[in-house]
Image: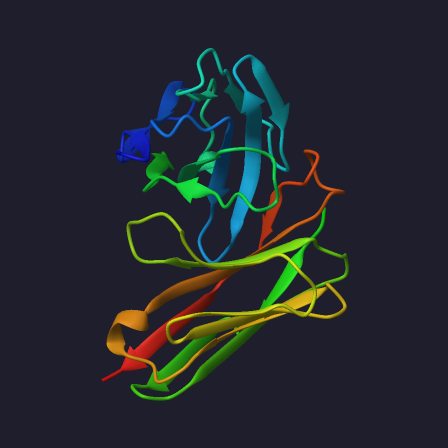
Length: 114
Length: 115
């Protein structure tokens, strides 16, 4: 199993450009999450999804959009990139909503907005 | 939003020393998790705690779920160079999204080990 796969690993964008960060998991997990990690900080939840067709905002959703058309994929979209969105983005997944389900993380996408 | 206070922010220790770090919150959590993150990688789960007072070990690592449900600590015994990394605590509260709650992360403890 590949687990949680994120692409690309690195990307540099200009202000105002748009892009989609891809996340895929092959563990048949229902729950998927997008976090951002700023230097010296913990992870902050951007959006999450409890299943295909269902998404919900996390702590810092502004400037982002997500979709969940399949169980496997949970792309994160930046429509108008801003310098404040320079960060490392992590996707995670878990099987269900039981508190005994730990999250599995991808290796991250490092995004710089210049 | 809810916050976790994780301390210390960083530690510089000699190989063989024991390490202790902790997280506190003003809110009650029903789950505490400890993750380790190495450069260029995502967080990897070390220990998960689900009951107040629970003490769980994973090799040289031991973590406890505080009785008040507002804190947790992680101990690493006899540290070795490969323990280097950033350690994050994370808590789950029903008051923060989802039926069991989404995770809230501490800011991390950066551990450096001198051989």
